[in-house]
Image 1 (cartoon, rainbow, N blue to C red):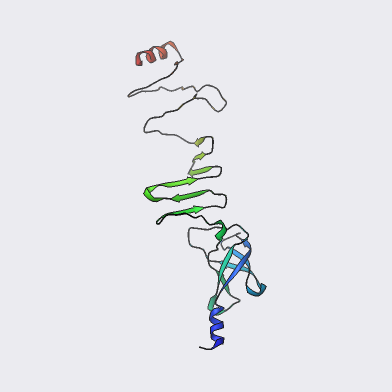
Image 2 (image 1 turned 90 degrees about the horizontal axis):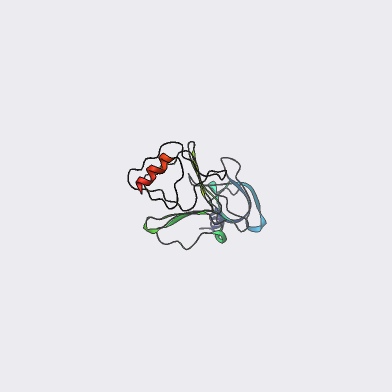
Length: 194
């Protein structure tokens, strides 16, 4: 094989330092600097279906392929930011993560770990719930198939005491620590439960 052919093969794959990432539409592109200070603008990044990411800059590296051996027709493999990589996974584990430490990790033993920097937001149709550092909020009906246990006061959003305007049926057992306030009829029925 001639030296010229070896050079052609070697130039099919080059490494570059990502200068900018553009994720404005259906195709993600990068501006990248390769050997000799060459700048290539608008290089398409190949991404797997169902997953997209924009690594944090700086120190993001791209592996570039010259399609058809043409160095003017480059494509980038998924980008690497080894300094921001999530590590210490055990064999068989996987994780989706962001630069701020938020993550969804699939761990050994059937554990799915969700860690958010501020909020976990779930939406299905008109029903939504948010988990923050201080509370769980929901929009839509809440159905509890087991026990509902709380410590503290039951209040409405404006801080007033919770009032239940429809009948409450207790099929098994109800434990109350403190007083039950209401009409004489409610107090009589509550007393008969105790």
